Figure 1 (tube, rainbow, N blue to C red):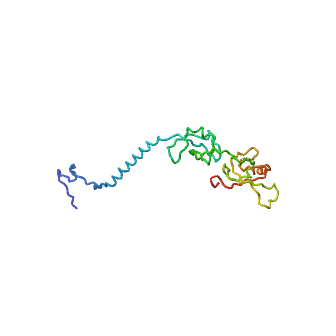
Figure 2 (figure 1 turned 30 degrees about the horizontal axis):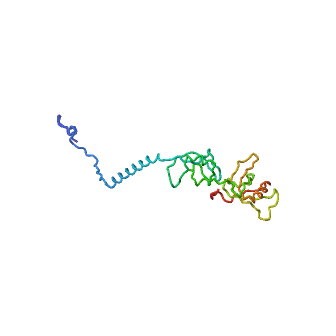
Figure 3 (figure 1 turned 45 degrees about the vertical axis):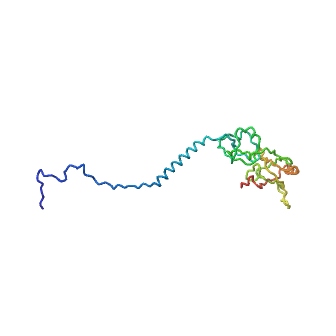
Length: 231
């Protein structure tokens, strides 16, 4: 096998200076087509967002002080200053919340419906009706927790108070008679272990209910929760 020897001084084809004018092929350049419809849509969205932000900035300060309840107030309960607070709300003719300046007039009124904590007060949620009304009486019925439904009773609940037999007696053969009533208040559990449930009844049956309650042999049945809730 013969080996070729380059004569001394001959040019090496791989040892040539780099020609700056020579272009190295690069990746192909992709040209994108402009889409006027998409550009117009983007401009429209920017304009809409800008207008919305301007509107919010303009209306965020357009609020007035109104009254709200700090905790849950049940129907029939009296509103005092400790259960009311001032909130800010945008004027809304569909809601018409009570202005904070009317606080002195609201204190002492009763809730005409259940008001969850944080609810803005409206005139429709207030009543000055006395409890009991004419022709009615309030009777306190002391019972143990075993004589009550497991569900908590709240003002406005419709209940019946049944007389129960003495311990060890046979159940009565006749259908037990009951007194229909409406709850207006429920106490905490007393040291005796009893709970006092204040109920409103008609004047002519108040005496019958008092006699039943005095024996301690009564049970309270919840017929319809206020507002129709399932509790």
